[in-house]
Length: 328
Image 1 (spheres, helix red, strand yellow):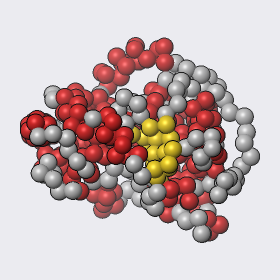
Image 2 (cartoon, one colour):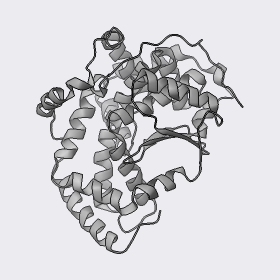
Image 3 (cartoon, helix red, strand yellow):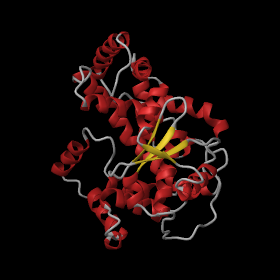
Image 4 (cartoon, one colour):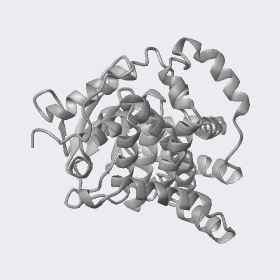
């Protein structure tokens, strides 16, 4: 397949020159990440986990079973990637790979030089416009400096699944803390996807297909019905449902797609999207002052349990480092 069908003809985009990632970042995302980084020993722990594998080892592991996207390899995806990078004015080109994985998903990974990995399942399910929203979402993660912490979360989940000695109460506590932040970061990057494509319908239909889509039955899906589902979910605030909503999120790295659609619609309805397209957004040159203001807003999401887990996991990593590289 050389080309994917497009539901909408390409239209002119507003290039968001010098846009700061803070423009699209959800307040809960910023607060949670700052709270994590403020925990004594957390930043050092992140460095130890990455150091245990090394930048090259990480890249080889995640890219070993993938095809690099170039003008001659998945050329239509490459073109979409270039347009997203231009609109969001990232300033450099992260490498892009497609992995033979049936689960419809994608991720931005790496440390010093982040790259994007898209599962073949997403390529099968999404049309051209929806694929572009996925690329905008992942570029948003990179621009927001989410990638290091997301990579560490992926590594810890893999280690936990292998049931290595590192897996235990300590690793689970760190995973839960990172997963809580990561769910909030997804809301930020959904906004980046919207700004990159400037196509609300494609952003929402893409989330619908990721929730339960199939290329065999694409004609059976109805975005309006999914939007009604999102409204029903948000309006049903009985105590029992509220409890189950919290329980369903525990251990999940992503918020439910129906909730993500609701959050995206709310951001549009509140006028933020239109203001950005009019040029009313934060520039990167204004970031130092903005970050100082944001630091005062961050609150502590994590208590003593996580602090103890950090110390325990840090000691284990010191011991593991003395025994050589960890093999996944």
